[in-house]
Length: 207
Image (cartoon, rainbow, N blue to C red; front, top):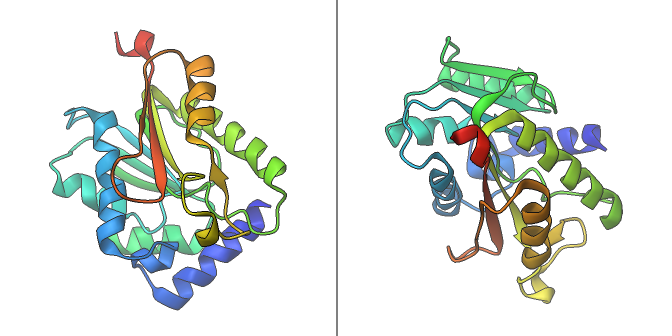
């Protein structure tokens, strides 16, 4: 399943290059808007360490640096070509590193994942939903102070949905995260896209 997803994104990158379309987004404005939602998680902590699971060609790192973030950053992606492109575009240093993989070995202050739950292909929805929950647990372990992710919403118009994409019920996802990770959970669905972003803070870890 993961190999199929990696092959899909590799083909998008080959076709469109390091652009929003290369990671299967519509364009730059919506791509930037998604990035902005994760700033809620960072909450003005410019020195916090960040882990980006499914980092693509590293555009979130660029966005963070432009927004004034200066803490360590590690990007993970299952597509080797994406990591090669991220390294080429942004370089690698003690504060900016790139990894090929699906499960981080490091723990950082915050972990984020953007778009990695969307493309299920021919995988049955129930199977993909289990994968989503398993990956959310990975994010929870990777971000000691908190984590955030986005997912396509079932609130979108039925006629605009694709059978190869995964859509989640916002209320069910909020309930799942509240029961699993505690009360400090925010769901953002007011930014004009057919998706939502979930922000979770680990209260005990953040003091």
